[in-house]
Structure formats: structure tokens, C-alpha cells
Image (cartoon, rainbow, N blue to C red; front, side, top):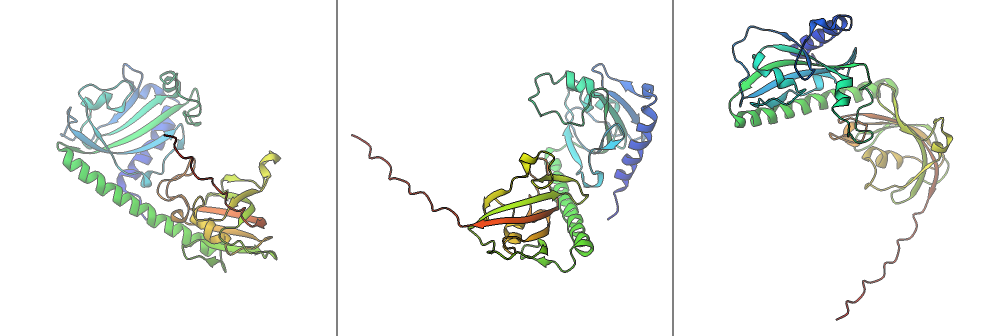
Amino acid sequence: MKMNKWVLMLVAIAFTVTSCTNADNKNFSVTKTGLGYKIFANGGKDSLKSGTFVRFRLVQKIEDSLLNVPDETPDQFAKIDSIARDFDIWEIANKLVVGDSVVYRFPVDTILSKSPNAPPGSIPAYLKKGSNYYLYVKILKRYDSVQVVQEEYRTEMMRMQQLVTDKRKAEVEKIAKEKFAGAIKTAGGTYVKITKDGDGPTCDSGKVVSMKYEGRYPDGRVFDGNMNNKDTTRNRPLDFNLAPMGLIRGWFEGLQLLKKGSKANFLVPFDQAYGTSGYQDIPPFTNLLFEVEVIDIKNAPPASAFPPPPVQQR
């Protein structure tokens, strides 16, 4: 699928400007709050007036590294307020018109100084002292009606969801063709390639499964697991009840094809994993790959017998 022309333009500006400004930050104007910016004027006439709404496209970078997938990032919508917040991209709204592109430079040291009470872990790891965070914005449209904005927002979200869904389905088909030849495909669409047959009991629903696993993104990065950690205390098998509640569907369906002693590789489509919401560090719409080994299978312990509630004394 081809990248939108405005996204291509923003990416081109992003790499061109960053390569120049890393050596020469004098190319940027600076607001009174310390926000650097450089405007690429387009000669349009529709200015961003207070009380109007704006539609814009963005690319994010930290120095030379892209932080978002540009053609998978939906257009953004915002209201232009009469009083701009400090260190905010709309500080310079009165200088912009529809069609303009802007490069913003946020010194990370300034970002951190403005967040002294941020909870531990809430500051992204990529915001390192001494670096710069860049935001590349293309002003697409101005609106006077909030109703029109709401309708276009809904349309944009639907468009982006369909675009990303189609891309992820194509990704699954490509990986399946290249690495999962002869695999079993479950009813939900998870591919299971058994690399070692087990000779013990089957992983039936309701059983307690003891398992080792390693989870990877399609690009090969490991995101979780208990197989190959340097900290051996994290390599203990994971015990869990094989039930649809509490497990991603790809695991629930895939494990039922295995026995004690089995080893397998799973290709789990995003809609059989963490869906359109994601989970912790796993982004939305993410297909996942797992290497699994079934260590043991046991019967679930009997349900606890709960005593009746006490009789209320009168």
C-alpha cells in the first residue's frame, strides 16, 4: 500500500531538517517558553484563528530515529484556543495557515524540567537528557464547526483502522508463507507449527499447563518470555489454567493442539492477541510470534467450597 503523499513529504522534511539542524540549530526560531520551530510556508490564505479547529498530520522523531509509523498514524484534530499553553505547538498558531508545514524542536532537558513530579516510569525511555524531540506537522484543513470535526474524526478513525487491519493481515500471510509452511491453522486464524511431538496428555481446556515460551514481534524483537533470560530466576515455567478467560485466543486455541513435551511456534494475528487496544508495551494491531514448550499438564484443583453468608442478627 502506498504511503500518502503528505506523509512522504513530512518524512522527507524530517530527515532533511534533522540532518541539518543537528549541526546548526540556528535554523530554528524559538518561542518565549523555549520551543524551537521552523515554518515551511505554503502561501495559503486560511489562517488558524482562535476558536477554529484544525486537522493536521504528524511525524515524531528523537534525533534521527522515527518514533511513529507515519502512514499508520491517523490525522489529528485540535481546537485553536485564544490563550496558547506554554511549550505547546499552538503557541505559534497565529503564524500558520492551511498548507504550511512546521518542524518543532523540543529540548528534552526542558521537557524534563517541566515535569518534576512525573511518576516513576511515566517518562518514556527515549527522552534522554541532552537530546531533542522533533515533531513534524502538516496543516491540512481548518474548520469552523465542531460537528464537522466530529464527523471527519470518526471517518478518519475508521479509515485508519481498515488500513492497518489490511496491512496486518498481509503481514500474517507473508510470514505464514515464509516460515509456517505445513502449519495448522486454528479456527481463529492462529498458525501452529509443531517442531516436536509430545507423548504426554493433551492440553485440554480446563487443565493447568506449565509452559516455557518466548514472544517476539514480527521484526524479531523479544518482548516477553521465560526461556533465554540472563536472569535465570525468570526462566521458571509459567503455570496457568487453560481457559478462554485470561488468555489471548491464539494461545487458547493453539495450545489445545499440543501435548506434554510438545514444542511449537505460533503466529498469532493481532485480533487473536491484544487486538486494537494493545497491552502494556505491546502496541495496538500487533501480530505476535511465540516459541512454546509444554513442560507439564495437570488437572485443575477442585473449586473451593465457599461457606454460606452469615445470617444477619436482628
